[in-house]
Image (cartoon, rainbow, N blue to C red; front, side, top):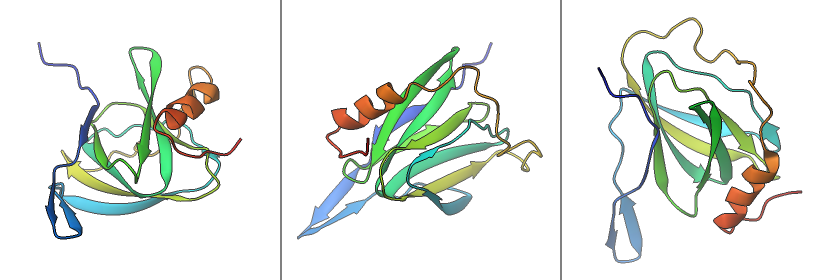
Length: 146
């Protein structure tokens, strides 16, 4: 029996040279920039044959992941550079509670051709807990809108 796919969150390795800090790039088959608009509460979606590797380069947002019939709220911010690796088959979405657009880099690993159901919104099995999403952002000391 194979292992169940899980989300992986890790801080980026860096090397400081003078006043400049260099972060280790993520190897990928394709690199995309994506904008998450201000005040967005996005639906879930899933990829069938790709692994997302997300890094926030401007702003902040909460990545929502559905695993084991419950949501996990993962705060991501330019202030704490870390990569979230989302393997195929994991429903995920975005919540941006701030008044600013968030810019992310997605270093995509392809495991086959895109599936026609990729990126299609999925109905939420139950509503997001927006108070919890605000709380995880507060925990990393970021200003968020009401």
